[in-house]
Length: 190
Image 1 (tube, helix red, strand yellow):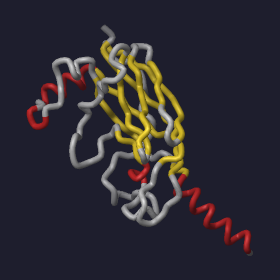
Image 2: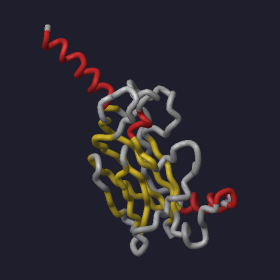
Image 3: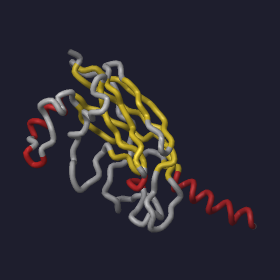
């Protein structure tokens, strides 16, 4: 009986922390006039990830308190995030913010079933070498044409394939223990 009493809470904790993706993994394939490169990785809490694509783009996951922040850079501009114009910029978490609390309900006692407005397993972003060199975020002065230029150049996605969150504790914020992911970057072939 005592073993059963320990087993049930352990199973509940495992169900709440070892999340399985709900969104399917998109294809990562070159399109008309575009190149594509897929990157797969794994990170644990507090560690960074850097991987270069065939086109010289560098996908980074920078650790933050509850997870990671996604950046795209390139050689010679390693400190400059070329994906920083990915919307939205205010109010709702940006898709590049990958934090554990996005996957829990408001009081951190169960899965997010829509009570927390945050991106889920599939995170889409845009990038361009023009960001910081002619196209920059200027608040409400940033035009939809500028964003369209960035999106026309570089598009990508990151999919959370598997992950584990910290144990649910009412009133606290969940963070990641570890994350396995797949990502895709596409850019013009010319």
